[in-house]
Length: 248
View 1 (cartoon, rainbow, N blue to C red):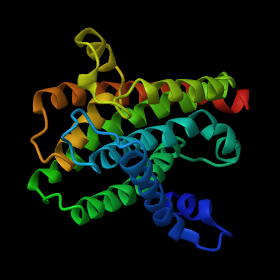
View 2 (cartoon, one colour):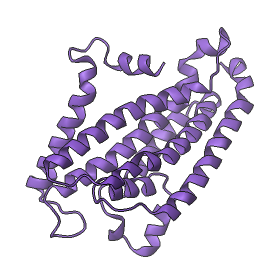
View 3 (cartoon, rainbow, N blue to C red):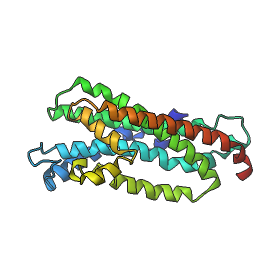
View 4 (cartoon, rainbow, N blue to C red):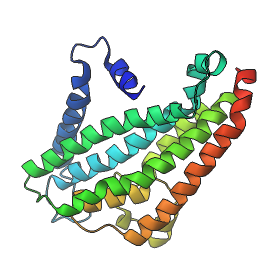
């Protein structure tokens, strides 16, 4: 189903699956031109490499887009697959997994392109990059838990899709994607840590771009919250799924 979801997105287009490679390459090239040569932006300090802002921004957007793509689909997943609810004995809980798998496929391609770009720019390949999949794992669990909850809620409250679109935009600008977390006052930084994207964006940049060890204590706390979120999301989904057929 994940394969069908991915191929279906590009079905009928001239380049087909190649768009999944072409699009991030063009976006990374655009970020590099606009922020490195037009705005001459620097990340955190003026002495930073002129390309650093573009790669830091791209890395943050990969994490955000992974979350956003899955969560934005979640409220309509059951409604758009009504045949699975009414006519077929089907494990509905895998539908959010399919959406997450599709989003993860595109995120993996984007990270691959990012690493190639970093290599071309002369950034050293460091073994700490291997922490990246382990950092993403609790993030995927948390995303899946939220998707399960929203997929169920979307059946009963149709307006939830509009609300989620607005909240995702708010989360984008309340995440350290366009600015470093250190640029904010300490009291505001603490509030941004409640954003589920903040810690993962920061830690992915730490291991991939700057080649430093992740904050294991922070990731341990995040992992615990992710497991609880995934467990609650699945419990809520299974508890409410009996009412899907009646509502639809």
